[in-house]
Image 1 (cartoon, rainbow, N blue to C red):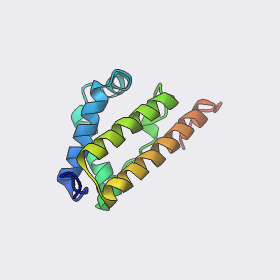
Image 2 (image 1 turned 90 degrees about the vertical axis):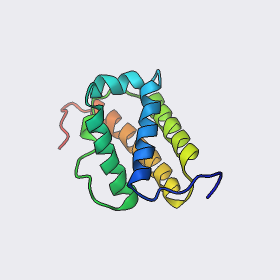
Image 3 (image 1 turned 90 degrees about the horizontal axis):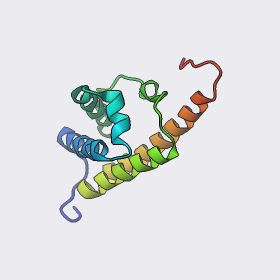
Image 4 (image 1 turned 120 degrees about the vertical axis):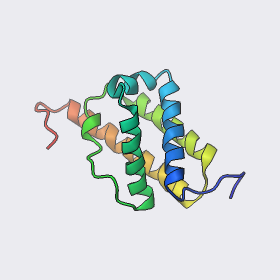
Length: 132
């Protein structure tokens, strides 16, 4: 335990991470409008999906059965959006957690941001817009 913070250990921690992070995203003047335009009034469903995603990734409890990239393929985002997303995610982890799983969450978020940014750029440059 460091400064009262513990590691990510269970579903309550996943929900705290996701809820706190997306509170930051929604109130962010740069990212908030992008997310709100896409998600609209479906925030409860989006948060539930994010709970299962991170539960699967970090706790190895396989509850997420989606394809994370396709919903992001046409988002109006660029490198600055990914940098801000990572800044908010890192800030959330640093405020709430410390430990092996917290470090893994940061590593995975960074890799996911890199991959999504590259795939979005590649997708934009394709003549035929298929995700298959």
